[in-house]
Image (cartoon, rainbow, N blue to C red):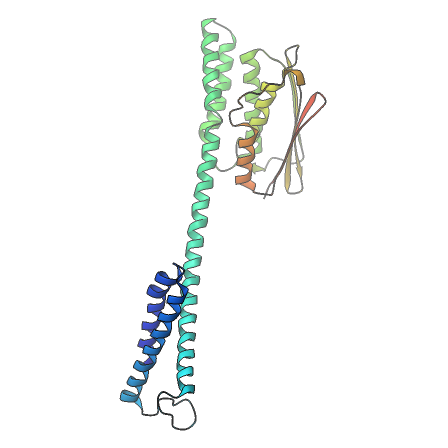
Length: 301
């Protein structure tokens, strides 16, 4: 009853006054001086209360009768008090560190999710705007293509509105979305399009974040048109153990390559992949003669 309240006072003094005021502000000498003064005061109060309330033998744990203020006794009391202060402070700051770490991880997760939503939101507006303009032009011409454009656009909008907000969608839906996008671009611009999409392996149960492959397909239309007006692209989806490999190859003419604003672009795609998979994915894009290659590997688990 004498020692325990004194331990509490010393611990609280250290945790809530000395450390915030002197350690955090890097006033280490002041901290050591005040801690030493607090320990000396603690010794006098403890010895006085023990001598007055408990026993004149102030060091009952040792052999023989001991009087106050002996060197060995002073060292023993101070070291014992430092042990209590150090142990409780360590528990306190370890607990606070874990709490702050959890908060930081939660904030990082929120930041990543917010950035991912922002990146996904940037993908589609320009596409819908251009498609509606094209649809308006087709209706003015009373073109027979208009109903087909409306149908394909409705399918794409259904995917974007409902599936893009989910963390994961099926690979089958993603492939259908890419096919609809390709077909809609062909109708809009009258491209002579040759596209081939292959799936290798059992891909029915594969789930992945939506809209991972669209930016690469968009680049085919922006940079892959040949001088005769044709666009050729080949896509393959293949499962290799716990990885999904996506390859895309399209013909292009290097002389026609110009720097244009790419919307989300490959850089933003890489950023999104970094947020989703960190170092667990690989993405390589490179030209070989008149063909441009994209190879993307992402983990399925």
